[in-house]
Amino acid sequence: MNPFLTSKVKERSGGRIVYLGFCAFMELIIIMAIINLLIDENWGAALLALLFVLGFARPIVREIIKEKDFKNAKAIASYLNGIPSESIKMAQINQKIPINDPVKQIDRLLKKEYLMNIHLDWEKDLVVLLALGSSNRYVEISCPNCGAKTVILQGRVKNCEYCGGTLLGKKSE
Image 1 (tube, rainbow, N blue to C red):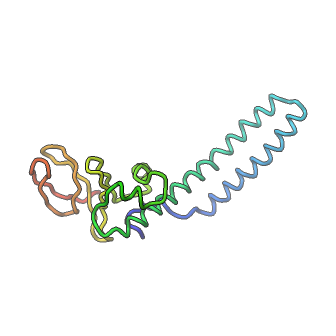
Image 2: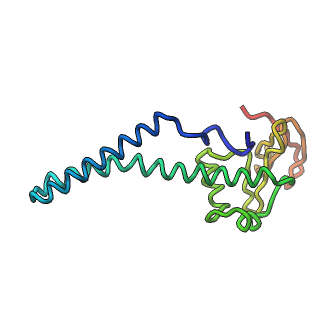
Image 3: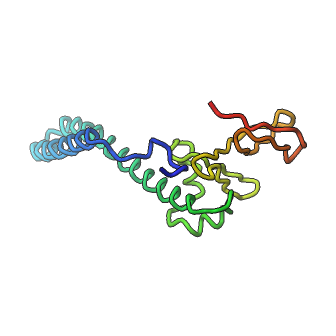
């Protein structure tokens, strides 16, 4: 499994497909009913039926957005998995990954918990890869002295880049 993908990014279950099929079927039935109501000039019932169409459309639209997010997460993770270094410039990612504004997508997908083991260093314009394989895992910590955020390999000790304080890479729970 790719070290940058979370368990949320997985194949759709059969039950979800059945539910979406039911929603699409109901949409068709209601649209046909709306057409008949409009022919009969029953505006109030047609308006009410239109609200039902919107209600059944919502899960379909959400699933389409989720599938696009999954596809983007997989494309980003696949590209990052082939990077041999611990970081890559944001400009390079924007050129190499064929999706709209990949760095912003990474930020959004991290917040949605579709991607992991990635840190965006906005000050240095770097994407820091926090996973160097299945056994090594980096964690983001704050310096107890100055509060600066940094990344460190779990179980390792290093000095803060800003104040020189000692940092311990504690395991995340």
